[in-house]
Length: 127
Image (cartoon, rainbow, N blue to C red):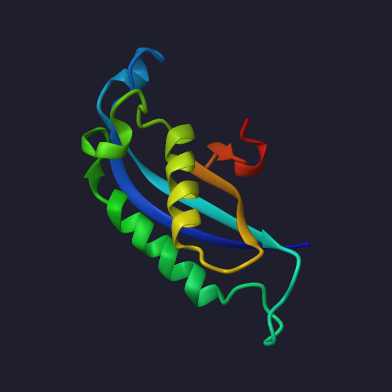
């Protein structure tokens, strides 16, 4: 099994509800996002997926989030608050839509709010 990781960043604000007094205030983060993809087989060039392809997909996803008030984005309505956990799910699902390489899947997405706090989503563990 091979696993690749691409790291990106974006800046955005959000406001959470019912999680604690401090986080319920409007606030922002310089988010770091780690996207992992995995697969068994390398292509004829000896790679799982070209890093340039992965980086482009991640940049496109980050452009939707960057310098936005996350609460206003439609994907965080209808019971999907803009938590780190839900952002990791969003990034994973968007990457799955874009990743069109047979046998390669999104294996993990981590969204870091700070240097010491992140949420990780593992798509394979969905129930």
